[in-house]
Image (cartoon, rainbow, N blue to C red; front, side, top):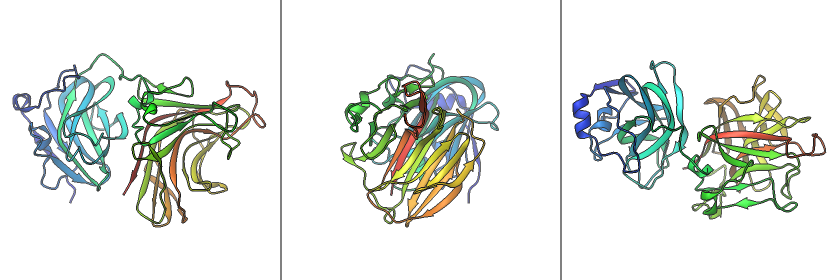
Length: 383
């Protein structure tokens, strides 16, 4: 049974027992007055503040959370989280802050932990005032449990998030980028390990004070041989980016979660795609914006499902595909929009800016006419 549990933690005890802040992190650890969780399995929320990596808080299911009450509003700038079995699996999560425990603001968009360490991992965000900080879990690469061994809330570091390349914002380990530049019908592609240090303005750069990555594709951009439209788009890979992803809708469960926004549409034909599933031949389904109409497509049926007719550029939303048992379930802000029955193989996810216009139907024919998206997080998982 899910229940809310509140544990008061004396500040003196907290300070005495906390594991040291990582050397690379200069901000001070803030005192926590109480820790609250949506529920637990006997591994209580207080364990996340006991200074031991041998204990943990655990709760099962999407959206399970652990919340830290600072006692009063303070300036916060990052969190540190140590994950149970964090060296063998990746946990999906997001971080939110609030001044009143009622209205919440996303500080760290949905992403994955590194999967390489049991120690604290620091997740930076823009400095802001908050009394409450909560970590929401969405399972891990092994199961749907959320388990935190230790957590910290850090004070301001004087910045708005530190990054130099998109890989500092998004986990690009199993992706490559296709750009709207290069020879005709052979656009530039950048794979790992080069992708971890790569950016190119204005097609693929950090944005929004290091909270997002900007993808831009102009109508006169270079296209692939199989498409007449340009793209600045991530393509799913495997084996740390060495191999193309290739999975089936009838075997396992495959999930893509994209937190992002459309910010610019091309003139004349204001159409663009932010996320898609592709099989061995063509796109299976995509999230496609036409003016203010946001659709989920089904193969060649472009207007399969109208998600909203009032989308405003710059509005941040979550697009999610879950594929299993020969079905694709598409969600908008965690609300199921449509279920598509389809068996396919050779599949992979894509995300970014895929402009659905070119110089034959959109003017001017220049790099100043483009579609653009901001992606705050992109997470692909398979089980």
